[in-house]
Image 1: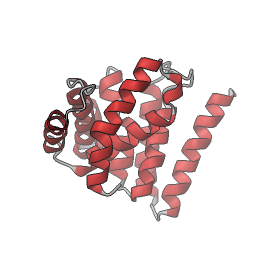
Image 2: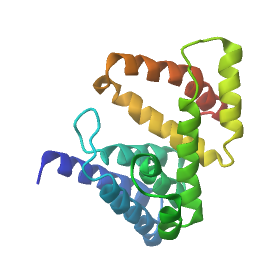
Image 3: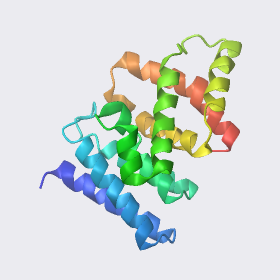
Length: 188
């Protein structure tokens, strides 16, 4: 067994332990395990810039989500949050396997990511930045979407050292100008 595989599995066990400590029952844990298995298969062969298997990222996002005492749909969506964007998986596949709530959460995170990529946040003009944040927030019909996106961004920042320098700077500016104010508004 490779050390990466061991690390990923041990991090998933840690996630399940956190959920059990939060009082989750067997059916809720089963839903999260199913999401993990599905995401692991869908992201099989994908790597992060660090060289680690991609699945470590959704697991770490799900672990971060436990801090806000989420429901099983939110943690499942955290494990699946990149699946529409980065694999051949479709919304309908998620809906059929995990239900409409999880599919809508994953789709919402994908749309936030897509919308955010349309803006150039290099310019720090406050009016322009507010013009980016406002429609971003208004497009989110479920607050769990932005919480998943914030957990995604936080984990990406924790591993930013593996990105090329220009990408590091771009991500840092986006975080400071878009996501930090949103997190502040939400009290996170």
